Structures are given as structure tokens and as C-alpha cells.
Image 1: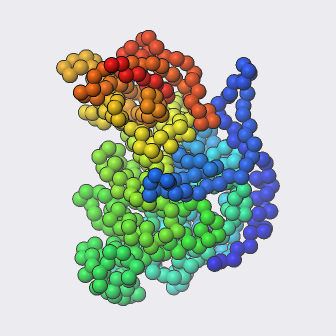
Image 2 (image 1 turned 135 degrees about the horizontal axis):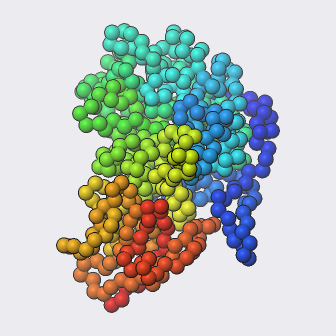
Image 3 (image 1 turned 180 degrees about the vertical axis):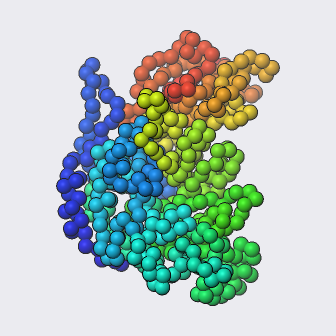
Length: 549
């Protein structure tokens, strides 16, 4: 493995990060009638993927406990300390617990073999000041199926670092995934980055994950048509391409052969880069995918990068890039059916659901609630943030995704173990679907969105004009339910055929501190007589029920 001298860089970051790393909760805690801010003593911070005792999907642990990643991804050219600092107020308004910041290969290795860690060090220091965790996004060989973030010395040397070629013999701006020199150069740089992170951050754990490349694959052509690639394409499919039979790529995959060929070489390339990095520092690593599912536009190299970890090639990618812990899918769809279809394709044995990139509309906020409610889901990240995020006419206005993050960040310590045990349900509003069931064993629960009016079939929600309803319900105990969400009216009832009625014993509005629900007030009378109301501004309830026979 590559030998990295980290002594000098360790000394450089020492001054910037010498302050004691403590968590500063955003809410006051009352003790003996006096409001005060808790200062939790510094401790060694750790991040790792942990095997689940109840599932084949690993769980992201940070500080020894399951972690729900609620991310805000900086824009592509915003991965610099000064910009991170300028965006601080907007990030605070987002309620994100994690900032996802790009690191370009060209930034850290401007000259071959000479590494400059000033930007990395500054991002770590700024994350500590803003009291958020950090995910670094390695923009190395690939960014959106392109090579734009490789150093100038790589771009200029077309012989040593060959490009993908078209069928007409023309190079495009993508490094060939079959080129060992490109792979090894990227791997050396990534290993140097990971070694540096270990030297300056292992004891603090500000950085909790690293993304290896960005939407790897080739845009502009279906496969590499260079003479070297042509020879490989016409040869037998290698034995480590799982599912392949004797014969060449066309014999195995027909019209899908170009994409399968590129996936094999891209996955091996990314796997080698990831393995070099993990050998230097064992942080969780993931790749993000530009999904292929676009009905009527299935054109690898055009509708999506050819060779990426698209769903039909996900098993092969995971087998060929074993140092990658999670394959996450970037999911911007605003319609619930395609969104959930894409997400479920990546929510498979050994690979927990993770959506590293999504949008910020109300539809995306609804889908974020659905995403984090899936058992063992790692979390979600909203792409892009500007200084005016959460502002309108000079005043703070809570964005839909920020409302999600505020609620979910609060309840995560209680929600996650219940969710992973299969005792959580989610309901999101859709156009034409304003009454959504969330049944539990022995108990029905319905989310009604919009004004509830009596009519044929009983009281029903009429829908919100902005389709803003979203709810997660978690069964904390046989008779207790944690409810969190917005723009909804909830009602408990017994399943059909079960005698009796459901009585509300106690309805508590509150929040979570140190992993425990803390009541802010009791609700009763008008506040509960017409359903359990989660207003558009959001609310968390702990509801105790009783079945009367």
C-alpha cells in the first residue's frame, strides 16, 4: 500500500483544530428552574458500519449508536472553508446534522506527488465550529460521468492517462476505466486523503463517511471503443463478473453488453481506489449512483452514465468493489411511484437504503420522510444550499426539508431502534390520496390530510393544497405510539371484527433529550376531540391508548 508522510500535515491542522470538540445542543435544558446549555465532555468519536443482529443490512453507527444522516450537500464549487463559513447561517436554518462537502482531486494534488491539505483542514475546522458532522465527497476520476475534477497534470497527459474513445476514434472528456495508470494515480491520492483524515480527525470523528467518486461512469458514449478496450470487449467475460457464462460480452448481454462491460471495469477501478483508501483509514465508504430508470430513455452513456452501479448491475458492482460499504442512489423524482421504485431497487440484502442526493421541494420533503422510515435506512441528503436558504423577504421561513430535519433529528434516538425492529409506519400525502392507513398488530391508525369532513364513508381528509402531509408512527410499547410529522390529522381505531373501542389515555406533546421523550405539555379537550392534529409547522406526540371492551 502507499506510504504517506502525514507528520507535516498533522502539525498544520493542529492550530486550526486545537479547540476541545464538544457538542452544543441547540435547545436549552431547564435544571432546578434555571435555563442552561449542556456542554458534553469531549470523547473519542467513531464512525463505522455495524452488523445488525436482526437484518442482513449493516447499520451506520456514530459515537457507538445508530445515526440518522440528515445531510445538506454543498454545491459543486462550494467545498471550500470560506464558502462553508458563509453558508453557516443557512445550514443552521436547515437543521441538518451533516454537511456533505466536495473535495476535488485537483484541489489536494495540484502537482503529482505534492499534496495540499489546507482545504480539507479548513472544512474539518469549520464543521467543528458549526457543530455538524462532515461527509467528504471525493471528486476524483469521475464527477457526473466526466473527468472535470482531475488535476491539470492528468488532463494534459493524454498518453499516460488515456480517454474513452468513440466508435469513430475520437476521445471524450472521460478517463478510460481500463487504464491502470489513471486508477493507480487516483488510488494514491485517495489513500493520501484517507491517511490524512486518520492523522488529523480519527480521535474526533468529525468526518463520518466518504463518498468515492461521484456518479461514476461514462457520459457521451455507450462504452470505450479504444483499440485496447475493443480487444477486451471481444474477449471472454472475466470469471469474476458474477452471473456471466462462457463467451464474450455480446454473447452474454446482447444489447446490454456495452453497459455491462463498462460496469465491470468501472466497478473494479472504483473498488481499487476504495480499497487503497480503506487500508489507510477504515471510515465507511459509499458510492452514489445516477439511476438508470427513465422509461423510454434507457440509453447508457446518454440517459445515465454507462458503467455506473445501476440497479440491474448492482450485484456485480457490490461483488467487484468490496471496499464500498453502501451503494446509494441519487433520487430526484417528484412522483411517489417512481421514487419508491428506484429506492427499493437499492434497499436490498447487505445494502441499506441511502439517498445521498435529492431535491428541496415539498415533494422531496415527503419522500424524505418515506425514505428515513424504511428499516435500516442510513439517511438522505439534499443537494445544494445558498445563503438565502430558509429566508424570504429578510425573514426566516422554514423550508419543507428543514421541517423534516428538525423533527427527525429530534426523534431519531427513539425512532431508529423501533424502525429497525419493524414497528414504524409512514404515510405521505399524494395527489388524490388524502387518507392513508398505517396499521399495526391489533391497532389501526389512519393519517388524514387536509380538512377532515364527515360524509359518505365517515370523516375523511380532503387533502392539503400543497400536498404537505407526512407522518411517521412508531410503536414504542404495546399501548404507546410516537407520532411525528406535519399537516395531518390522525385517528386510532380497532381492526375490523375486533370488539371494543380505543380511548386516548394520555396525549403528550414534547421532544427528545438524551434519548428520552420529554413532555412539554398535555393535550386534551378541543386539541384531541377531533383527531390528533399535527399542524403544518410540525409536531411530535407521544400517545398512550387503551382498548375498552
